Length: 634
Image (tube, rainbow, N blue to C red; front, top):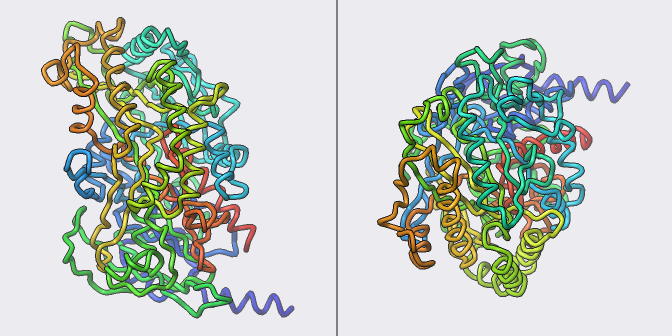
C-alpha cells in the first residue's frame, strides 16, 4: 500500500501530456519529466520513443531545429544537398595543418537531426570492429548485442522482382523486419545501368586482389563491391514517380504517434522544437557523484552559424526526476557537457565555466573520415535513363576496399606492419597534441584498428569508393575516403555562450598513413573510372583533371592534390567515447558520464573508433540498446 501511495504522489508531480510537438518554449517551462533528452536527432528520438512505451516514464525532447514534417526538401531523397544546406548547423573547423583551410562540417538542425539531411546509406561495420568496443572497456557492447539492436530498429524491405531485375541484392537474414526504420532499395529504381557498370569496372580493376561483389553491406563482412540500400520508404510501385521518401528518425519514431497511424499512443512524450539546451541544472551531489535535476534552455538562434556574441532570450528550466540523456551528436554533445561543467578544467576555465566534473577526455578522440572527390562529365550520347536518379539517392554503388585493394599486396603488408610497429609512438604524439588523453587507451585503439585491417578472414575495409550521379544526369563523381583515419582531433567550447558553436579540429590527414592511403586510393579511383564499362558513360575528368594531376603523376603530385582538396566526410565519432575512464573513456558501459549519477550520452560521440560503414544504422542500434538499459535500470 505504501508503495502505491508513493507512486501516486510521484506521478502527481509529473507533467503528463499526449505526444505533442511544440515550438513554444514557455509551454513546458517548470514542468517535471522523468527523462529530459537533449537533441531530437537520430539517437534522441529513438531513445525517447522507446522510453515512451513504458508507462512509468514521461519524456521531454529538446531539439534546436524546427519540425519540417511536410517539407519536400527533407522528404525527397535526391535533395540531400538542399536539405543539408537549409537545415544544418555549419561548424567551421580551425585551419587544418594539412592545408591551412577552415572546412565546413554540417550537422542536422531539424527534427530528426542528421537522419533528416544525410545520404541515407544503410551499412554496418565489421563484427570485429563492434567487438572492439567491448575490448576497449565497455562490457556488453559487442557485435552480437549491437546486431540485435540494429535489427530491432529495422523494417527491411526485401528486394522485389522488379528491383532484383535491376541488380538489387540482399541477405535478408541479417536484417530486422518489425522495426520502425524503413530500409529499402528505391522504387522506382533508376540509374541502375550506371550502378551496374561501376561495379563491373571495380571488379575488373581490382581483379588482381580478387575483389568480389557481395549481396549486402550489413552482414558484418562489408569488404567488396555492393549496391546501396537506404533508410527510405519506397514508392508503392515501379510506376510511382516521385514515390520514394526519406525515413528519418522523426518519420520512424515520432510522426506515427503524433498524427499518423498510431496517434494517441505514447501519450507521455513531448517534443520541443526550436529550443537550445544551455546546460544541466545541478542538484545536490550524492555519494560523490554529481546529480542532474533538470535542463536549462532558451529559444534557439535563427542562424545556422551564430556569431560568438549572439544573445539568447529568456532562459527557462525543466526538471528531470530521473535523468538527463544527451543525444546532441559528436560535435554537440561535448558542447553541452562542457557548458554544464563537465570536461577539462583548463578548457572550462578558459571559457569561464565552473567545474562540476573534471573529465579532461571530453571533446578529445574526435575522428572524421577525410574525403576526396573525383568528378566527371557524363557523355551526353548515352541514354539519359542510364544515369537518371530523380527522386532517389545519387550514390548508388560502392566499393569497400581492403588495405590490399588500395595499396597492393606488398605495400599493404609493409604499411600494416609499420602501423603495428609504431602504435605507441603514434599514440604518444597524438596525446601530446591534445587529440587524446591516454597513451595506453589510444594504443589499444590503434592496435585494434591495425589488426582489423590485416585480418585475413574478415579484413576491415580502409577505403570507401562510392559512385554517384547527379539528378540532372550531367556529371558523375567517385567519392573516396579513408574509413579508418589514424588522426585524432578535438571539439571544445571557446566561450560560455551556449549559442556559440564549439571549436572543431579534426586534424584531417595529420598522420602520414592517412595521406599515403588517401593518395593511393584516389589514384586507383581514376583507374577504376578509366575502366570499361563505366568509362563508356563518361566524357572527361574535371577534378582533379589531367592538368593538376597528369596521367604519369608522381606520388608527390597525388599527395599535393589530396592535401589541397580534402573535405569532411561528415561521419564524426568518438568525442565522448565509451570505455575505461583511465584510458580516455567518458562514459561507462551504461553510457553514464563518469562522475555523474544520472547524465547519459547516447549518439555517435560514444563510438570509440571509426568503423568501416556509414553511421546511421549503428547509431540507431546504440539508441535502441541504451533505451533497454534505462528501462531495466528503472
